[in-house]
Amino acid sequence: MSAVTEDLDQLLDERELSRLHWRCRRGLLENDLFVERFFQRFEPTLTRRDAAGLSALMDLPDNDLLDLLLRRTEPTPEIDGPELRSVLERMRQRAF
Image (cartoon, rainbow, N blue to C red; front, side, top):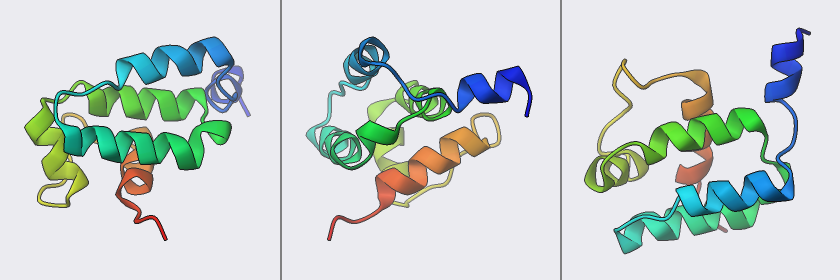
């Protein structure tokens, strides 16, 4: 495993998690609900790779993000990648 891969698989520290929470604040309540549920379920295991995928999703306009979360659309080739897909699938999971 390369040093870059190992770095991406490293768990986020408290400061990185705090910055990621701030980065994920959204304008639509619906998006905030998905994001909050994601953090509740996965925060202890989030890696730098996850942070990259989540950041890519947060670069989207609110309505585009909501369409992805509700499975109305799929990621375009310009933004699609394994990190984004991994986070998106976990955000789409229903809470039981």
